[in-house]
Every structure is written in structure tokens, then in C-alpha cells.
Image (tube, rainbow, N blue to C red; front, side, top):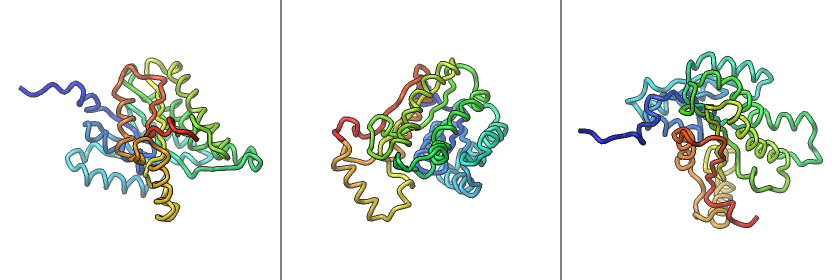
Length: 262
């Protein structure tokens, strides 16, 4: 007789869309979902990145090769909503949607802000997830077994000087998921709030610059003494999908950074 697997098999056979799944936290969520026996659909803005991601996942996980697919969706386009609708026309029925997509952070001093750059700063990180919830919820299986998990950041809970615009969007996601959890019930909607995580996000700077940030983060910015890793943060998204009793909730994964002084 084999062991019962009511906990480890909870995502087995589930169909999960990871928007922003070609790198960083999203890629780790895709890996973890495959390990849990799920079917994974990756979405990103560039076809080459989607193809490379599918190849990487298929190489790392050869047995579930047929359980990985992908589609492009440009969330920075003025035609964003049409792209999102097109994406969901290709996915078929889903069990979970995970949104980890991001773009270059627009750290705009408040005195240099105007309506155009304020709107642009929120395209991918605020307007896109709201429209994903609008259209994606129509593709989710009804009931609390289905979920949407969005992503914010620690700036939504601890202000940083000069971050007024990005913090407004990041904090706004807290209210978004609470209200979506009501509007889309009994389907569930949650939010993951990571602190600093060692992902490709930092590739725009030199290795020396990143190492300085990492050392400062680990010595002064966490209680764990470690910068977050995508493979650890991915567990928060698995929890959001697997706990059918969790909705309208912000899940923090920041190494204890919010416990420390500014």
C-alpha cells in the first residue's frame, strides 16, 4: 500500500498560468509547480524568452515535458487589454493564475512626475494585474480550489524616500486583492510581498554593485542574514494556491526586513 499524498498532491493535474514566468520568481514558481505535478503555461512579452524558458524547464524536468507550454503577452503595450484577452483565448480552462511580471522600476522624484510617466509606471505592475483578474477569472474553474496570486513588494509596507509613485501602486495592490477576493468569490485572490530577492532584476548593474547591495542587505536588512532566493519565495505562491482557506491575504516573504528599523 502506498502512502497517502493529500498534501503533496494538491496541485497534481492542476493547470497553472504563470505570467512573468520566464525568469526570477516566476520561473521558480513554474519549476515548483511542475514538481508538484501541475501543467504549467508560461507567458512573457517576448517569444524568444518563452521558447528559451520552455526549453530550460523541459531539460530540467524531462518527464513532464508535455506539461509545459507558453504564449506571448505584451503587458507594456497600449493594446494591453487586447493582448490579455488573446492570451486567455489560448490557455483554455485554468485552475490558478500567478502574476509575477514586472518591468524596469520607474523611480521618479515626485517633483518630476507628470500624468504620462505616472501612468506608464503602473502599466505592468498595477493596471495589468487588474485586467488579468478581469479576464482570467472567466477562465478559472469555479470554487475555492481556484486562485489568482498577484505580486507587490516590501515598499508597500515600508516607505522609501523617492518612491512615492511606485509605492502608491505597490500599496494599491493590497486593496485590489481584498476587493477582488469579494468580487470574484468563491474563487480566491491573494498577494505575495517579497523583499529583496536575488534574481535577474539586478543584471542591469555590475557584479560589484550587486555584491555591495547583497552584502548590505544580508548584514543590515534582514534578520536571517540572507538575501531572498527565488526557490524560497516560490513557496509563498505554492501556499497561496494550495490553501483553499486563504483569500484576500498578503503573504510576506522578506527575511524579516520589516522587523528592522529604517
